[in-house]
Image (cartoon, rainbow, N blue to C red; front, side, top):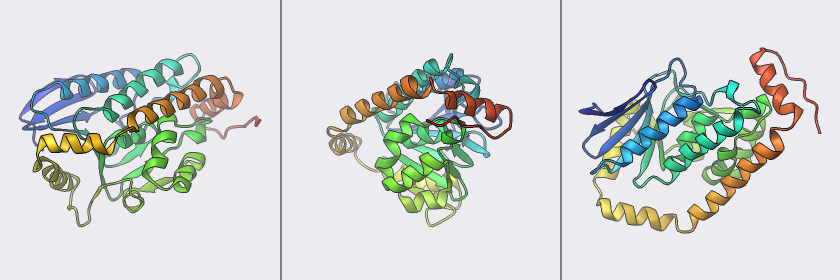
Length: 266
C-alpha cells in the first residue's frame, strides 16, 4: 500500500491513508520497543485513523523489517512505573479490540511480548512465514495479562499455556497452522507480506461495509463484556499480586544485568 496522504506523524508513528484503508506504521528502531511514549503515540494514531470519514479498514504494520515489535520497554516494568505502563498499554489494546472498523496486523520479524498482544488484539493477522511470535515475559519474572485473556481464545489452550508458561516462540508458519494467523506470506497467500496483505484487504473491501459491520457485531455478541471483565482481573493480578513479589524484581534486574535470575519461589 503506497500512502497517498500522511494523516498523522510523530517520532515513532505515522498514519497513512489510501482510499478506505488507514495504516498505522510503527517506526522506532531498532526493534519497535513500546515504551510509554510510543504506546501513547500509537493510541493517538489509532484514534486518528478511526476518526476519519470513509475509513473501512485499519492496518497496523512496522516500518522496520526486523520486527513488528519486540515488546514493551523492560525498564518501565519496575514497580514504580509498571502501573502507568500497564494502564496505557491496556487502553491501547482496548482501542484496537473495540475499534469501529475491522483491524489487521501485518507482521514480519519479531513479534514478542506486548508486540504480540497488540497483533492479537487485531481482528485479523497477516504474517511472514519466518516471523517470530512469543510471549516471553515469564523469563523475566512476569506474565502477559492481555495475552493470558486473548491467546487461549485464538489457539488451543494447551498451546497457549505452553507459550505463556515457558516463553516458547513459534514461527509465522506454526502460528498459521495453529489458527493465530489468517494469511501467510511466502505461501499460497502471496510471495511477500504486502502481496498477502493486498489479497486479504481486497477480500474485505469487496464486501458491503454495512453488512461487514453488522456481521462483526453479531459474531461478538456478549463478547465485549466478558473480555473486558477478564482483562480487568488479569491486570489486577499483575499489579496487586505479581509486582510485590521478589521474583518480579529479580527477573527484570537479571535481564538488564545479562545474568540468569535467582528465583525465590513461593
